[in-house]
Length: 396
Image 1 (cartoon, rainbow, N blue to C red):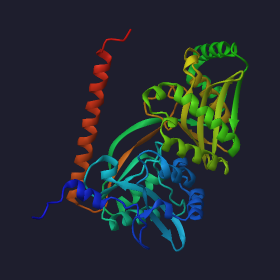
Image 2: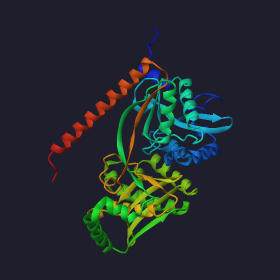
Image 3: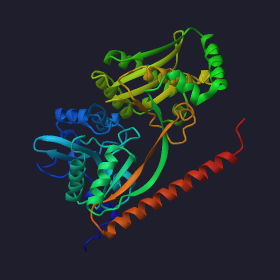
Image 4: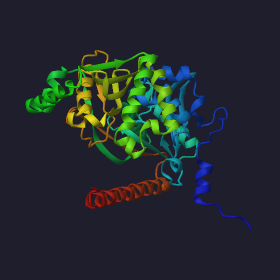
């Protein structure tokens, strides 16, 4: 008797293999991308993305929880890497057993792939062809800047081939125009009354010791400051929920490897706000080309009434605006983030985009329908959970 293959069997057969890919195959294990080529491409990338720098992505892939199934699509011009897209299968990403490849989440909410700025459209075309060669019927580009250079390149290739990308969902994310004067920017964003209140809270913080803003830049200093950050993050609500980086061995190994490695090339710094000798807030910031990326923040919950996270962000704003090498900063926060949105008033559209790889392909409609149904079910579940929590009696 022959056993009929299940949908999961089909998905597992389609999923990128962790084994070494043969020469010339469409999908390559991320660890087999030549490091020097990847670093050179990052320097020429049409759109900055600190989360796809090789030191970061390789550390994520090596140990971060649930993120080690990454392969890559590559685009080449002779012996020069001109495009790279870390990907996973739709099954591994969303548990949908259909033939599509999905941007691999690099433990950061931006998946714009590095495309050579001088050959971005050619690179995007090659990546789409490699996805076809791998058997995919669609690409799902997650967390893309919808007006960014990478998305524009994929949109142009799609236009040339009569393909219609579909935005699966989108929102507006906070960003900082770091070319402005920080004091004027903060005044415009928060107003005189709010700034006066924040100065009052800073004076209250100073009652615990002189307030100091420190920036760790060298690998040694970053490694030390990271331990402070990890302790702060684990002491707060993330620790209570079990989602702090230090609470998972794989996540802790990833961040301890990635941050000093990037600091060695000036692409990571950790900022810390102290009251005397006591750290009250810390944040991890990545840097790529002229853009900064505010990865995570950790605060001491004992100082919650003094808004340590806001105080740190005010100092970070002044720090970035004073740096001529930085033109903008991506909050990498959720579109409705209550802390960063009132301070960084710039906005850009971010979303997930489904790109068909063949014209008139009925499988793409199946993929689109399955993703929309899954997203709808998840949103309904989230609303139900919020409804239950809001109506549950508070514990004494």
